[in-house]
Length: 178
View 1 (cartoon, rainbow, N blue to C red):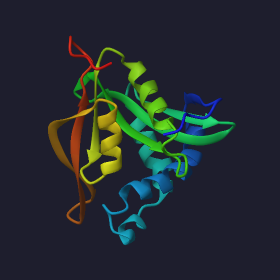
View 2 (cartoon, helix red, strand yellow):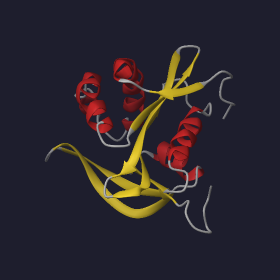
View 3 (spheres, rainbow, N blue to C red):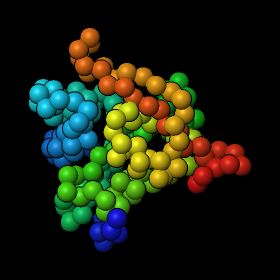
């Protein structure tokens, strides 16, 4: 991993950013799910749905935010996070994507640290596709541990489901990792 670029900034994402965020996230998402979903299935997803439906739905939840990593006006990554539903004392990382070609430069770590600072005393949780080994290694290197939770992410009921594994970063109590 190389050091993050000098001059990187992290700022609040706004609805006016959604189109640019989706254009950045879509190729990264496709790379993340290559080998998990067949190419024909990847082709079924249109990033415009994120702009019109997914981002507004996810960010409508109380306390949820989108953060953007930029360098010299170029969008390098995004994160979406907030209090976990039913457990507001847990921070849930919903999304963390880095622009294709900008991976392994420390940007993901900066976005994760930014999210963790939003609820510094609380445990952090997330879901990761069982077969997304690159993302799983990233989170494990950052101290997240498999926590025994599992679920099926349903993209097309009865047709397309992706097994997900739960991860937790324990930050409360004497065994806090951060």
